[in-house]
Amino acid sequence: MVNGPIKGRGAITNRASRFDTTVREPDEAADSGIGIGVPRTEVTEEYARSIVSTNRSPDIPFDRSINPYRGCEHGCIYCYARPTHAYLGLSPGLDFETRLVVKRNAAEQLSTELGRKGYRCEPIALGANTDPYQPVERIHRVTREILEVLHDCRHPITITTKSALIERDLDLLAAMAERRLVEVQISITTLDGQLARVMEPRATAPARRLETVRTLADAGVPVRLMVAPLIPFVNDADLENLITEGARHGAQSAGYIVLRLPLEIKDLFREWLEAHFPLRAHRVLACVTELHGGQLYNPQFGKRQTGTGIFADLLRQRFAIALRKSGMRCELPPLDSSLFRPPRRHAAQLDLFAEDD
Image (tube, rainbow, N blue to C red; front, side, top):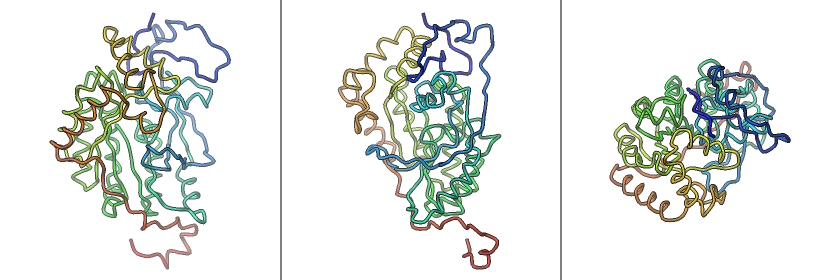
């Protein structure tokens, strides 16, 4: 038996993580929130020893990233960052979207790392795992502080978000865009507001996100529309309309990623699917299995994000045709890493010699 949906949350349960040594039998009332109300968001702070993470994945277009928060209140059930909460001894389920961690010293630590001798400047991805503009950013402003450091250092950055809150930082983003130092990816999974509330319960509504695309584009900020993830028989029918609307609102490029279900996400997604779409759950899972070569997830580089097989080929063809009709391209022009200047360690003494902005 699958528990019912929890209003305002994505996960159905607090399913055990892969590191748990004991497994608790589920209490359906407690796990589903019945009788105890909607689980509240709890926020704690940590002081990070490092803030720039690196990767060598050949199918990811960046080698470094920053995540101001652990966990994400948007509650997207398919979020590939969910399994990282297991490293905190927490569940990738409800804990991931209700027990958040703020990296309080992120901006200070970033300044230290950018100022190290021999630092090589390349674009940093902000929000590669969790959304840097999730609701708690309104209060804690860690993303804003990070942007201020990168702006002052003339450091290029890419940002991925589902939130209209990014408009708050338009002053910094517009100034950076003039120097080819920023690009923004706005992720929109569907144009159907009701479906969006099920897929991403606390993210900005799709129509409002399109307005954000327009606002950024009008300010000169390059915008890429990301349709991610595409879930067979759930939101894939929206692909062409999303690309059309993205272009109409000023996006310059577009991309898509098929559903990925690594580690604990497989079971969390199955619970969610059976709770929200019980009549098509089997069909969806069968197609996802086909996309990933006979299993629910294939981690192989070059295939994990686009899939293989007949359905994957169909998605590629549909995307290529829609992109051509829209006039958009796959990628944005490269950012400029040549303008970087390290943080000023002794600003008071160096102001006399600082070059003009």
